[in-house]
Every structure is written in C-alpha cells, then in structure tokens.
Length: 241
Image (tube, rainbow, N blue to C red; front, side, top):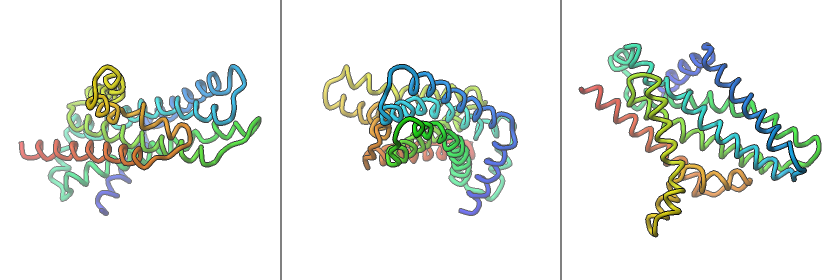
C-alpha cells in the first residue's frame, strides 16, 4: 500500500508541475462557467433545483472529457518514453502501478471538480440551496469521473502512445454512453441489460436530481474495478511477453 501511495504522490506532483494539468483545469472551468451562465442561469426563470440539475448535467460531460485527457498519459507515456521497463524492473507489482497512477488521476480530478463549487453557490444570490442536492451531485460527478478515469487507464495500458490512448478511451466511453440507445431498440431481456450498462442515462440522472441510490454507486464502483483489473492484466501480459 505504501508503494501505491508513493506512486500516486509522484504522479499527482507531475500533474501539478506540468502545463498540461493546469490547461485541463482552466479549460474545464471555462467551459463549465460558460455553459452554467448560458443555460443554467440564462433564459427564463428557473427554480434553484432546476439550476443545480442543469449544472450537474453539463458538468458530467466535461468531467468525462477531462477524464480522457487526464488518463491518457498514465501508462501510455511510460511506454512511449521507454520508462515502463524501469517500472517492471522495480519491486513494484503491476496492480500497485495501476492503482497508484489511477489514484493520482482521481485526486487531480477531485481537485478540479471541487474548484467548480463556486458556481452552484452563486444560486444563493437569488435563491435557496439544498446542501443535500449539491452533495449528491458532486458525489455523482466523482463516481462518474472515477469510472471514466478507470476506463481511460485501461485505454492507456493498451495504447502505444497518448493520442491512441485518448482515442481508445473515448471510444469505450462512447460505447457505454450509447448503450441506452440499444436499450430502446432491443427486446427484453437485452434492453434491460443495455439499460443497466449505460454509463450516464440511467445511473447519473438520480445524482443530478439530488438522489443517491445504492445501485448507482455500486455500478460506478464496479465499472472502476473491472477497468482497473483489465489494465492490470494488460500490464502483466506485457511483462511476460
């Protein structure tokens, strides 16, 4: 566990030392701010709950996109630079490498996500806030981000470079996002399966509305576990190749 935390600390420091990390934060804050002002606060008068729901809806999209760009460097950069062999030769196990890098990306994503908290707080100027709604929404964003980062880590483990890692991760995320479309055109029980697999449509909307269901929490944690397990298996296969 100590070696995992050391890897996570090193990787998080790398994010905070590079221009790429601050660029991702700046782009996410800018896009979230523009969309929040244009769609959540703008237009006809809305109830505070509707404004919060719209904010979390739009933020979920930027969270997933940011996760792809955050995770694309985790393992693909090591392979591209030729430093992955140094990790293999060190006394660090494959699951510690994957988990350490994932935790660093999750910590960075959490910092970026919490930096947007001033936006929903602006609702207090003209309305009332439900702290439970805000807590549920941010929990949903972190769980969605965790699942997206884990998928990105798997894509980064498969790819030879960062661009390919971003493409692979994006394709896997889109596939999970569009499962709800397959649910609409298939018969039961397949429709139920596709609906349950959908990354956003069924599982994030309750968080967006300020409601936390155990099944949705379990879903995102399960996606995170499966993706990280797959990334570990990819590293183990390449170690013995």
